[in-house]
Every structure is written in structure tokens, then in C-alpha cells.
Amino acid sequence: MAGGHGTRLRPLTFTGNKHMLPIANKPMLFYGLEHLTNTGIHEIGVVLGPIKEGVREAIEQHSRINAEITYIDQPEPRGLAHAVLISEPFLKNEPFVMYLGDNLLKQGVQPFIQTFNQQRSDCVIGVTKVGDPTRYGIVEMDGNKIGRLVEKPREAKSDLALIGVYIFNHKIFQAVKEIKPSWRNELEITDAIQNLLDQGAKIDVQRVQGWWKDTGRPEDLLEANQLVLSDLEPSNLGRICGSATISGDVSIDTGTEVLEGSTIRGPAIIGRNCRIGPHTYIGPYTSIGDGTTIEGGEIENSIVMNNTTIRCGKRIVDSLIGNNATIIDSEKNIPKGHRMILGERTFVSI
Image (tube, rainbow, N blue to C red; front, side, top):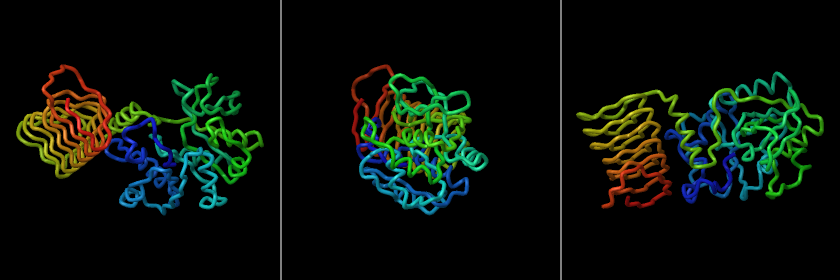
């Protein structure tokens, strides 16, 4: 699933699909695609919404996605169950994995597929405990059995949230055809699964092992970046100059220079053909995209996208900085960290 408007991530999504926003320098959509192909799935339908620019090109250029890709258009975001319905000609009567492209799941999807096959399920749903159940589809349990499912309840009776990974067989199509749009005017996948349950279908629950992250908000992107960078394998394909120092787990790609007096403290990842320094500090949990120049100042716990220029002696923290943005020094000297969310081609003086 790679549709939707991504309104909670504006201005970053004014000019692009939210599923292409990078986590540790890789579009978040690719994490799900790789999980699917790693299980041996080689037929994948990608549901695209109104903002689809660059998605096909990026997928076709990604060497680790060994699959036949079919693109399915969903011009308006009419719900996840609607996306299933319009995908029926592609899916036919085969069992399938449904994976939300803006969710990150450390364990992958293999445990869900194993449960589906071993239990001969009609449906397997992934769940995990969350702090704010009103943001999610919720599963209410009755002992070891599912009691009911509720989409974004105003008063939640359970803290078990659907994580956006499902396994279905062909019965889901009839279930979707029998439900009505919700108060959001969408066909909700929770209502479709509830319909399956009411019809006596066998639905199994798979609890998440390891971390899971929904990346719907800016702060979620930063937390997902932290989680992925925590497992980073260090490497250095660039050039470290003079008195520059590297500590912790740091990945530096080809063509990148770290100049005199600069410090990079991991976990951090720096893309291709970047120029860091001189006298620049890159702190933990920072991802810097390809072709970026950062001269002076400090940056920490931030995502900097491709071809950005930062020439600034200030401290930048907890920030999301879009492609081709420019940040320069002003004459002001404010002794605190700047937190910002900048869209593509933004120019800022701080």
C-alpha cells in the first residue's frame, strides 16, 4: 500500500509520495518490499494514490527488489478495504500479504506467513501494544479469541493495535463487498475483518516480535530512523581528512569527504558524494542523503535528504530537511538548538 495524501507529513509530502521519504537513507517503502521478496514472494502489486511521482522509477532502479511489480491505481484514498477490492483482478483467488508501505517492522513477514499456513487460517492479523490506541485500528480480545475490531475508537477498550500487516485468502473479497463506508467515507479493513469474523472465518492473531513503527507523523520518522540506525553496520567508502574523527557505528558512502576538524559520532549514515566540514559536528541518529554539503555547526537526531546545503554555525536537532533545501547563517546568535521541518527546495536563514 503506497497511496494516500500524507497530510500529517506536510510540507515534505507536498512534492512527493510519503512512502518515498528516507529512513536511514532508504525510502521507507523499500523496507516492506524487501521483507516480501525475502520470503520468496515474487509477485507484488503496489497500490498508488494521487501522488505517485518517482515511485515506479525508484522501484525499478532498486536492485534488491527481485519481483514482478504490478502498479494498481487508487486515485482517491477511499480506504484500505477499497484498495483490496480494486486489487482483486491482480490477486485473483490466491492468498496474499497486505503490507502498509509506511510501517516499519523489524521481524519481517515470515512469521505471519508461517502462522497462516500452519493454522490454515482465512486471515492472520499482526498486533502490538500501543500507548495511544485511538490512533489505530484496535483488536479487542476475549481470552485467546478475537472479540471485535474497532477503527480509531474514541474510547479504546484495548491497547492492541493492528500493525498494517495482514494475510488473507479469497474470502476477504466478499467481506469487503458487504461492508459500507465508515464515518470517514472509507471502506475500513477493520470492518471487513469484523465481517469475516461474524461469518465464522478462522482469524489468527500474530503478535509482533521486536520493534514496529508507524511513520505517519514527523516525530515517527525520526524515531524510525533511530531504530534502523541502531542496527547499522559501519563502513567507510569515503575519505577522512586530517584531524577529522569518527566514533561509533558510522556508514560513509563513496565519493564523500569528511574534512579537517570535523567529528561524526554514530550511529549515523552519510550518503554518496557528500562534503562534511571543515569543523562540523554530526551527532548520533543522523541520516544525510546523497550530494549534501554541511559546513560548520552541529546537527543531531535528524534526517537530511538529498542535495541539501547547510552552511551554518548553529545547532540543528530533531529536524527533517527535504531535498535541495538550503540553510545559511544569519547575523543572529541564538544559543539553542533549532528544530525544523523543511520541504523540498526551501531556503532558510537562521
